[in-house]
Length: 320
Image 1 (tube, helix red, strand yellow):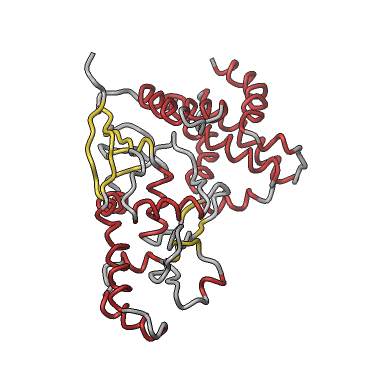
Image 2 (image 1 turned 120 degrees about the vertical axis):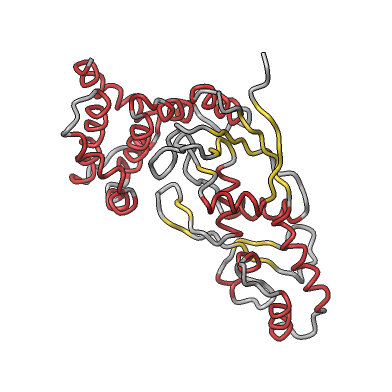
């Protein structure tokens, strides 16, 4: 039996360029961006010092469903490494990201070129740091196409009289070198099926105890393309939020047009998949409109899976 993967490397700059151009896509089996600012800072610090940051896993397949809707259509799909790549996009490219609550947020990492401590010259931006002239509030400005090092160093010297311009320039050069750091990438063979790729994703993440039983089930649900698994996974995730925060319905309505539009397509399709999704949507709509109060346990995907299975079983049985 031959290997089902190969190994290569990409620079950080190349990865960000491929994400920006849409040549690398994030599939629905991935989870939302859940890192806090400290983890983003630590990733940047590791790259700054030239430390390894783990492998990404990609797969080129024309038929896999990706985040935001649609099909990959021959694109390279990011199977593992979403949190790291999203963190890089937020910190270095200055892009807003959708957090666990599907809210658009910026993650700003500050840098102090004069820092001489033993831990890190990076910090998650706070109001106090933002007012300190020694700190650069957002490292994304160093990676902008129009960044000019000479102009920046002169401006920094004016704000911090007495500092050594050579030291400042050297630190900025070291920071910008992050763009050329190499990231290892495992490339899964194109002929692997979505089930095999999902299995790889689960096995790798479970080694670090990252995935719970609910995560395992959610990944398997999302991989079931034949029965609209990606939409059902999203419906379950949304229900978990709505069960404890009914006002979250407004966020869904504003940020996920594809999901909202799916309800209008259900009436014209009597398939098992759409009936299942319809029932889930009905539950969530009822929860949101009545502002029901549910126990804290309702926010658990595991609880939701059992709850929805009990309710959806009669619907799916009749659809057979």
